[in-house]
Length: 278
Ligand code: 15L
Image 1 (spheres, rainbow, N blue to C red):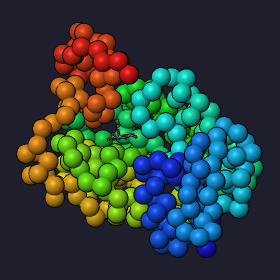
Image 2: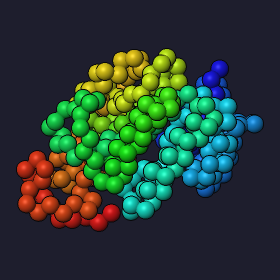
Image 3: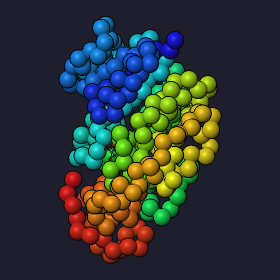
């Protein structure tokens, strides 16, 4: 059976993945950042540390076939923090994968790599990237880095542009972006089991009726989502929409309005609201 490593195991998404993979009996090594993880089962393989340290990365990847890399800053933050966690640490992770002979990395990219597209524009996997901030930009860089390590070193990568990975959708935007937990675990199972994926990018999204993203071209992964945010539509639409005008207009939602200073008209010709700080 393949040995799997999970980084970012202490985070919101990481906790879900760790619990589910352990329940399925998958041989897993889970790593958190600064805080130690309490084992979920006797003898669980857990560790923690700063992934900018090659010794920590070596410990994480020793004997590993597939790394699920969820670690990093997951929201918009000042640039130095993003550079440390999402740029420098990612290089160390891929360098560690080279040293340790890791075959495949599942890289948690994000919809914020394309957040500046209007919600009226459906996207395919080969769309040009339009990040909505430094966080989204770090995912653009990560996807390109993953590509380079496939091209130059033969390390496979699946870059998953995660939408909104939540137990259930809670606001109108999620009717398009929701990535349900059952679909996430099925997706990761495919990322572990699919043969010869090489380098690929996939939308991390459920089978939402209102989805903006078309996964055509990623069939070789065998990802077949079964969850659909539409089941919650009536309930969600009966509640308030927490997004401002700009957030409702662009796919990146609330991230778009952070440090936004256009006063003429937006990239889609729309009028901008006032600037919001990060
Ligand atoms: C992300 O990439 C974030 O990590 C998460 O916190 C959500 O904001 C999500 O995207 C989203 O767009 O809903």
